[in-house]
Length: 359
Image 1: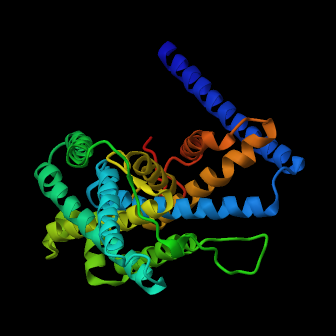
Image 2: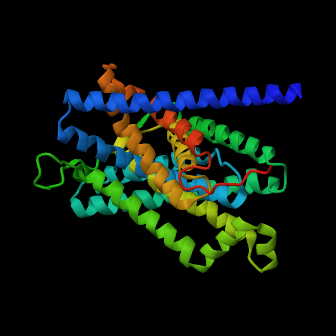
């Protein structure tokens, strides 16, 4: 009886602390936003610029998050090496871009620039897919029937191995992405208050096309149906004649292709790549997948865009009103605080399914 009372008091105290944290964060957001908007420090052009940059960054997170959520959906495994798959694609795009720039093809004219970007994406996708299939075959497949902690440890080990393998091959220096001149030009919208560069259009368009193609593939094709069946129940899917290994390999390949394309877009925006490039974007993409509901493909897309907007607009909107110096340097704090808030309010994520608790 005494133990039961203590347990209830402890649960009540924890619930009280969580509610206090929720209220404090909500008040901080509301009051900070009101103070920032009332001060009028930022023009409409500045806010629109932050929104566009948040959408661009969120699109990259969404493309990488798709790999996390697809692998988890079919294997119930967090593929912590996925950030390094993204990094490998960034390196692949860099070497293709360097070769095209060396022969003068990259910036010869707008058409060759577009072709060059497509070739960079193709090269990055090929590198990422090859590496992802190698990791799946060596690090994951032999442990498929092992306890869930074992492949998780293997995934962490694969992540560190790939990081330092790339450092061994390419050194610890930073490689500068060649400039694609046409992508730095402003889009002629004719609006003073709203400006975009062609690189922003490229990222947003590429992300939307690839995400729509993936959703159509998973929902409307025979192989996509097989992947969904394997994600529901591998044993039953095998009894129905579905090649489980093929479905899993295709899942890794599709997720890696998305990450490779995202790597090129990331390199074109930030203009650099090195052996540790995949760590922070990988963590952010994993955060986006959790925000949207891990294992849910539309959730990963929504989570990526949501995280990008919070990271792009949030620090300025929430913190400038409190006169916090350089609020953009705290964007990681804002992004991960929002993750904590979502997990407190809705642990399954934005689009994740609620699971009934057993009595």
